[in-house]
Image (cartoon, rainbow, N blue to C red; front, side, top):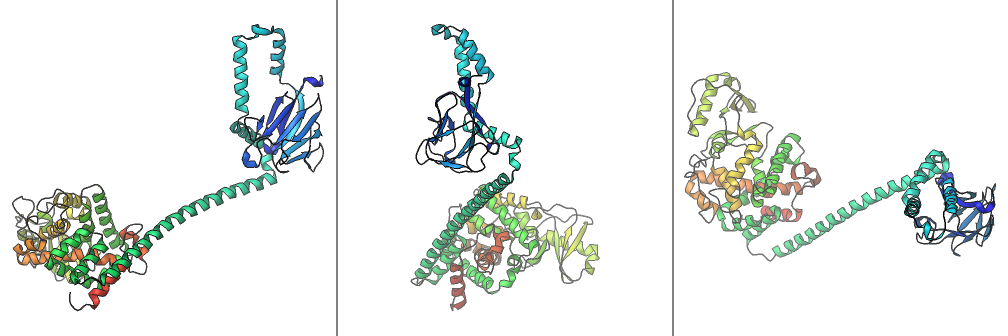
Length: 557
């Protein structure tokens, strides 16, 4: 075959995929990163410039390899040579010589002279039989040319070249060469390192944002500490600190105007801060007790997010599930609003009468001080149930009640309960439904949620439900906290029962203020994430320290 019937092909070596480019019948073939000017386009990331190298055909078999720019680096391998030479000027090459771009390890092309593809030869033979001129402009000819150019464009696009190179790279076995394995490990290590650094950078940004917030909070608290030296009102100092710790400005306003309640809250906060062991169950990673409290707190938070409970009330409601020296038992004993020893049940330790007055479906229980052996007497257990039912003005059923008992303090205190009966006090879902109805934004006999007394009045209503005179199931009964200026004004109408409600309300508010401070001032506040969320939602320690110092060192409260 005549040499002038041969075309130029450039083939990548197997380790670079083995892709064959061509045929090229032009006098000049350009390689580089400029897609508009080059026949073979290479990624600029390889260090290839816009026009990097030219292969020039000066005759049937005379080929010249030349840098397209004086800064372009090219290495030439003569056929059979094991080492390349750098080309800086136009250099004659022969078929089977090869060259690489940028570095000796860069993309390497083998120069080939070969016949045209059979389909091209056939097309040209057909073209010779077709008359020239306008008669060649047939629809079939135009369609074939469009197809040819489309396929040429598709096959010379970067993604298609990469795909073809990858397939040849695997099929030829070049992937198993040691240098390629090392290169692959290096590239993979680079991606892993890059990903790790990206994750580290992301964490660093979050840490920076967190630290910036902490710095801002420290600045705010420092300003608070400086400003306190100019405060002349001792009472104002306490309420401001309480508001800063809880995040409730309504609490500040409500306590400022309610002297009796403020005094009780202040006293209860001081007691908690001076007797931290009472709340070891919450602060010492006791998973059973912590878990119950954390579950209730999380439910309240979600209820607030859904609008069932307002945010101010949601700050205080979790602390209804907190007691001094919390027990693992489902029950706990204490004195109710009538001064009677009773059993409280469920996560909130609600009394039978209290739950009944708030609209829950409950089963009777009973308090027993004495030995467990005495409770083997069924008649004794029935009499204990009768006391509880009678105090709630509920008819006593006829016949024997199927019951059992649980020790609160072995050999001293016990709670008896009806076996096999449902009790909403033990069901957090039912408790939250009741909370929405009795303490939600549309609840009766409490101020609106945007009133400064709104949240405190809802806590007082919760405790007031234990009184025999406060049955909130009926519209006409139950203390109305929406008519008076302060909660204490309403409670005064309840006489001795009102004093009990105020004390319980103050204890709940005090826990909302003091217990988070105990967690914030603990040696490992991060350990509190199981109780206060992840990350823990805790107050800044500065106002806690100031509050503790003032309550400890000031002579009067």
